[in-house]
Image (tube, rainbow, N blue to C red; front, side, top):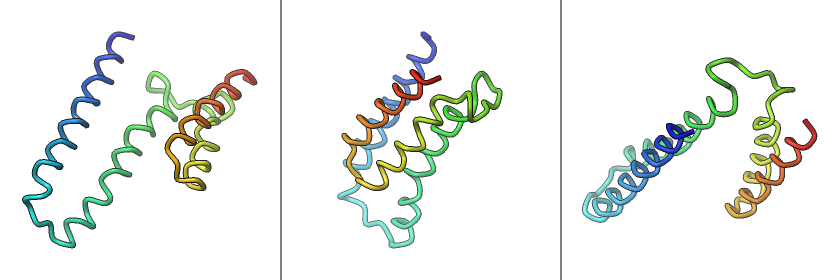
Length: 105
């Protein structure tokens, strides 16, 4: 548990530094259209790289869908996020879906 806390803190720090750096340099640097297009793919790729192993693996082993509480909660949460595009509603619905899936399993 302690190592997971360090991982979360380091990822948060990296995210903060990346965003602070882009805010500080973003107004001074003129990005080409090609670079802007390339950068638009970075966030979804990082999100997928972080969520994929979390949803599909447990201690390095594949988790079947019927035993995977997180995946069962993630699917309707993704639909809510896509449909509403509201962060708060997505987070609240994700917590609710996980609680329901955990209770039913």
